[in-house]
Length: 144
Image (cartoon, rainbow, N blue to C red; front, side):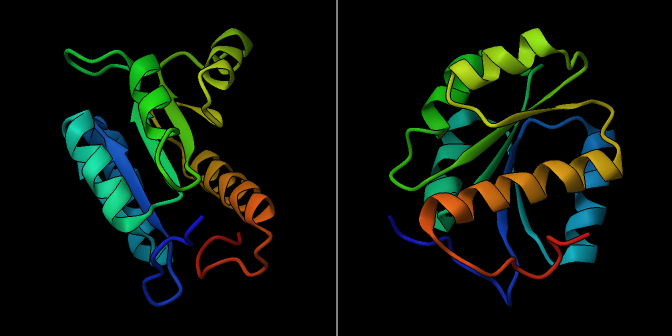
């Protein structure tokens, strides 16, 4: 597996159809932590960006127009490189978390996003990704 493209020690993330208030939280954290955040409006666009950047983390809004999150997550985790998919949902319970895991996803975050939840989820996804690939360092901005 290829490593993700690193931008000045940062990490690339792709977010699909995230609501405006959640976009603001993600954008602010990305700016502060030097994450390279790409927003996509369709799963085809997200797929293209995810693979071009070899982004290790994919964020998917549960409430997408015309697309089922289950299919989208299954598709993104089938990328040629390792991808940790995180679902963003108004409901974040054990049942949904188990369903995300069954689809190959990694975690669930409650919307509206809270900074501490985003940092925790991104950090855990990055640590999982690194452990699976046997890598060591965390990129700038992943540590709390």
